[in-house]
Length: 282
Length: 304
Image (tube, rainbow over all chains, first blue to last red; front, side, top):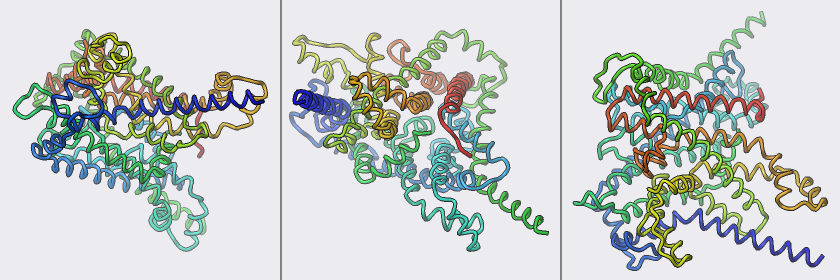
């Protein structure tokens, strides 16, 4: 019995060590980015030590002084805020009848929504690019913001899953009180679904904060650059020399980009984690 | 009389439902249906980036099928998608199982395991470009320190190691973190009694996993793996463009279709040709979509 217990104990310790090892692997790029952002460019390109030899804030001041950093922040926040607002309003509206009403055509609409979820955005980006070019939206945030106000299938799907879990009796009680179907949505469902809105809003914010593909296709000029594209263009080269990649300033800009999602996780992990669990299940 | 009243009420309810669906309908027509039709139409022209175009029939397609780049790219796309799906699923299961061991600090561990998923992919790509760098790269440094020999492998540009790097990087994407959280909750749903029965039989950890855990979570593993396919198709651009460039270095070994589309449209300015490539990508996605439906019919219930 004693031997069995000590064997169990040693496996527990082994697993704990394994956990630490995995944590080290998973966190290594982030440590690398943080440490790189305090290195001098000479050190970054010659020595891979984790602790910077002469820690410097030069890279951060380089970013602030040599680029329109606050313009990029404004653009990213604008993009994130407006797409999230748009998708919360439109997707919740569309999800409501799909989750809680019966009407002819419901099954077909739902099938199409699930079907379009499977089409990767990148497959349609060339025709969309031409289309947005024709109406003069290129080189602005509009090609990303406007579609958000017309319900993303994925978010409709998430809202539907959440709305279905709310007891139907609430609707019936509201009907008896003289509420019509639209009234039920605005007066009953929305107020009690606040956590759902927070969850989907967070997922949307994380997505748009990190989104690279669509801005790369749609945005050209400096004045509408988002942080992700700035990372690939503005901060890429040292000023005056287009052949030396300015890694430490890329790392410094990355550090500044990593911190907000980290804080979001620390304060909203409950919403974020629950939302992701639901999104992946079905 | 009451039936007419009821019909009226029904009609009113139906109209309300359609009104609520309107934003989706407009969006679907403008941003999905029309672009699909337009993509097919453009693929039959020699449209350039500056907008000049004329009808050329199927010549984009015949050029495409003769192009070595195209076939290479299709191969890379399918290879990348399937391997990424497999690698990230296995890694997510491993992390979920580790986190589900009842030990101290699991909350902190979950933070460390999950945070890379919400970090911008472009930051990760650049971090790994330097970690796997030839000269002052962290990995070469660690290998040198352990082996005592000077390691100077050019991980990103060596045909033997580039896939190792690329698939290692996929472990840090959102998809992996999402699956990890999903598996954590589904592993918790496996009945304890089954494990206890295993203990009585004196089964080892591996047998427990193979005979209890895996069969119990297999529907969810399967479904998440296949949805991972779609995010691999969609997310490959944001990951590989900053990592290996539009040419998919070395020698196009990592040039997935989305990179080729971008290159043809914006570097070679052949938008018509890029549209033909998009059509192929669209059909590959449809193929994976059909597979998902086949799986989800078996494993997931959409109650009505």
